[in-house]
Image: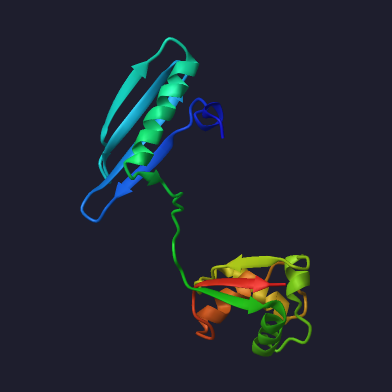
Amino acid sequence: MTEHELFRAGCWHELVYEDGTVSKWWSIKVHKSTHIREWGALGSDGRSKVTEFANAELARTDASKKFNSQISQGYKAKKPHLNVETELVHSVDYVDLENFINSVYGLEDFSFVVDQECSNDSSHRFRPDGTLDDYDREQIKELLDGKYPAYMTDRLLNDCVRQRLIPAGVYIVEV
């Protein structure tokens, strides 16, 4: 990779150094004929310095030298970080869900695929908590009367939570 590719304008290049007793960071960004360096202890705002050059090429060349100097001192490229939340997810095959709903509600032909208008190789996420409003109850009554309103799965899962047949939480239904 050339210096020009590595230090393209506006892109931060971040490094970290950790040796068991010291944890610090260092970064540099080239902007036109300047580069901006920032550094400090991990978790701190750190300090910064802006250096101006006669042209963009000189800024990139100096940024490359400073970057390589930090690497030679033991700094490593910062690994990307993805913020994630961990939660319990119930994974259910759609056929098992259809059999469960048919059994609980005394139905013979409830179809998850038809209800959700979904295609093969798809996943559908629900978060039932047991909450049903009057409209939901009315729709469940229509289903039990043989009218089959659309998009009933969420209502039925909420009703099953309300009846304590399944736990509240996140459900992924795989088709």
